[in-house]
Amino acid sequence: MTIPTGDGDPTGTLPPASLSDEHAVLRREVTSRADRVLREADEGRWPAEELAALVDYLHLEVLRQVVDEEWLLFRTARHTPDDMARLRADHLELRLTIEELAQAAAGGRTLRPAQLGATVRDLQTELDAHLAAEEKILSPSRRRPRPASPASARSRTSGMR
Image (spheres, one colour):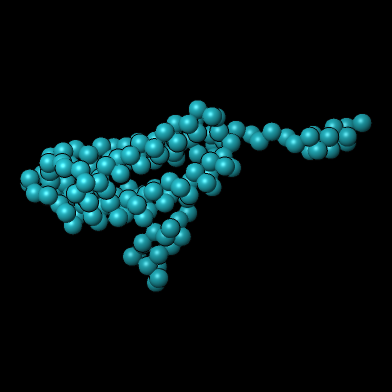
């Protein structure tokens, strides 16, 4: 993922420096698209185009990041099982809410604009809480030390004789 910068970077993008940078991009982009959906829904109109754009972004970026995190970060992270279970449960909730929005966008679920607005606000709340928890749990200061391998333990003790 790249971060659109628009200032001082001739290519218009810089690679993200950290997980929190990637999360900032996700927050900004989801908020931008969600605000368009909410403006229409709050006026009592069905935001077909705006909802499609939000759902597309959620599928292409948010769910992709969820899959990437579960594959890359969770496999190598050294955190408590409870921390990892919390993040996985959050990912499931996000997937379910995104699926609900996708069904509404496809016409497979009938929602009134006010119900759609509530669902979009729920998504934003879920996403913000999850990203904050993920940054806290996955921060380097929260990592548990990796257990020493038997070989490294032997090499440390053999020099003590």
